[in-house]
Image 1 (cartoon, rainbow over the protein chains, first blue to last red):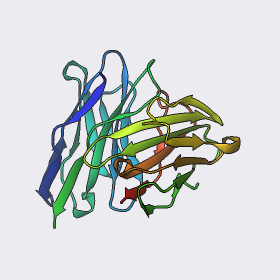
Image 2: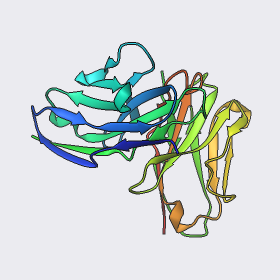
Image 3: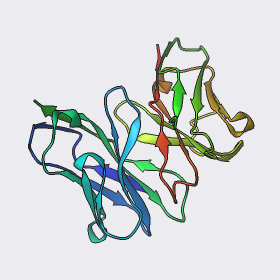
Image 4: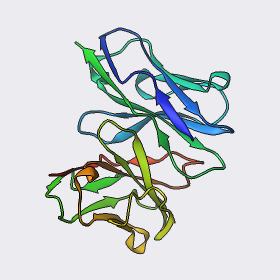
Length: 114
Length: 115
């Protein structure tokens, strides 16, 4: 079955620390990949997406992710986190040519200490 | 441009009662999706409308759930009668094209608690 796995369910970091959130997907074929973020009390919003082309994708707020096809991974990174990055982060995938459904990981709660 | 709007933001109801959730998609978006997150689990697909037609409702849990999209604009999701396991956050999303081709925009979700 198609699935998306996020390695960490809860991450606590201090401000200015570097961040990497792991994400792996189990799909055959071509996929679109996403990272969404939900800040407290707000809607899910798109951080970045990969459809094709350069596997290093830059998103909003200084986030980036790298698509590594051989590892079925799409890890999210940020060199220096801020207190305002406290949120829940979701990795997601859509199989192209398949069902028109987004498959989400379980989410990672990120807590940044000021 | 207004985003995807969901009403209410929170709802607490008793087991056996009926609840109707509403989603207003971004204007002009033909594709509308409902997703649900039960506590501690993934956000899971419920169904997909293209305009007023149900494209895929394979994720609907059972026949206590009824989704409609009148005139291809806003959508409602009714749960009748509600059970304890229906508690969770219900998300709506819309997109101008299918999610295989473009991104979906999500609302803030409706937190449903069945007691």
